[in-house]
Length: 402
Image (cartoon, rainbow, N blue to C red; front, side, top):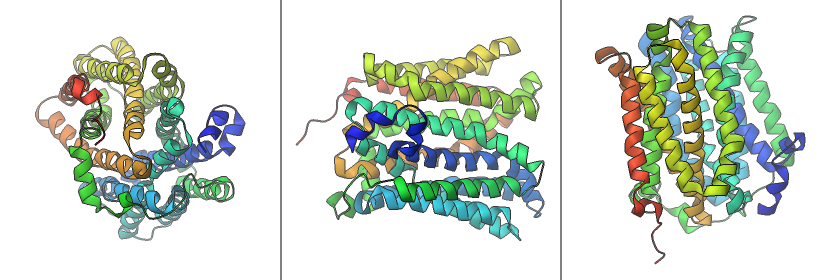
């Protein structure tokens, strides 16, 4: 399977390859998540939801991902990636139909729970990429998955805003149809990337495996870097609309355009530039550069008061984050044993889920209690800590085999 990845990195034929189908799976999941961002508050208000309930409706998705990401990672290690990915697409389709035709608020919650459980298969998608790529192409494969994240956040809000003007249910029906279409394609054309069977790694208790991975010298520091960096970056995303409104008078349109700008640039970086850089200079220099660029951009943004100065900072932010996150995933996947790819990457996905729970609450509290730019400045300092940790020689050098 590894040799097939190199043939499928470009052109329309890419979307018919296993890597292209996995890319589409992640993209559709993130499109669905992106659709929710601008629509959930207004849509949930029609069911009498309070502000607190609207916040919970958003957070329950991340909670389900936190719980189920390591489960799906282990399941994919034991039974194969294909059934997990197919189940993800089918579950997402059902969830969006439930959301669009919900008769009551509790059905909205049930739909978000189901979609969070289905979306937690991201670890299996990463493991699939690790299965079918060589070490040389691993970063590029992970970068494509990262690009799917960026594109999903671009396309999702756009679909939500456009089709909601036609009918409030239309965006959810469209997301369900896209997931079903991708399910049909994957059913026909997505091969299994590893032979199913019971493995020792799959037998380990989930939480034992999680604690062992976090404490491991091979993976632990990288998981902490990913978690701390996610806190800083998601915190920025959580308050940027408020920040833009207070500092620059942004409305919904301007805020949406800014996120499109960041997403397009980050997708270009993750889909192409990061591979060329890592091939030339190696993963660790690229990771360190990404961490420091993100740190500087968040710190500068926190102090920026002129509109003309904001956009160069946004370019720097997109470049830094685009270099950082796919490179961390690639390094971890290179260090992980072949029979534990899904489990280890599942721990990383859980760390991301935990960050998506903590960061919005913490960032909003900082914004209200400390100051408009404080979440961005704190986020920048978190990335400074990540940069220092990534520069430690013991972190860069994996433990010797025993």
